[in-house]
Image (tube, rainbow, N blue to C red; front, side, top):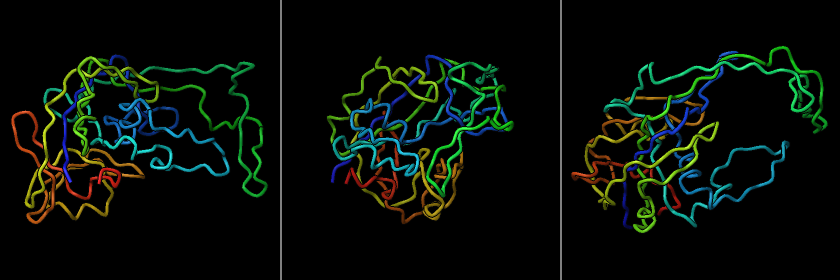
Length: 255
């Protein structure tokens, strides 16, 4: 099996929002973009199967919604960085206020509840706990998002060019590709390496001898770390790219 990787740097051309959490009516935003969101955006959704939305069977299954094998690439999570730091300063964020008024359509005066016993969606009065005003946090324009794209088909990685634009985030912010690295071959090697930020779950932490966690969600951790001496990785060392990917991080559709 051959594996290649390429570094990509994008900048947000508008205020970027990716919901982290909602404290009442104060929406906070993430400082990273998940691997799944990057695949959907940077492939322009070309493999999306567009399943019908059925509330009774609502589920999250990215591998079922996208035909990953037909376009076999993947991404490390995209991290907003500034001057070499992976933690944006407070000045990078902006807070806007919103106030929703009652209109005929769309409306905030109605609410919907799903009845599990009958399987019906019922309409009623909007609950008082649902906010109609509050704050909305975003990352100010012209900040850089860093990710690595990797795959076994070198030609697919060559399709990324400086100047291309994509849409990302809750409000579909335009992102412009401002820098691309060389396509670099990766080699299999066993040893201790420093990884970039990866999207993992808690069961995989034992692969590291030390690590740093940037963010946590119910589905994954965003973390980087030093692998143990006997760790199996795909690695590359060079001027244009320094990368170490644990073998277990390689998705099945690339193998």
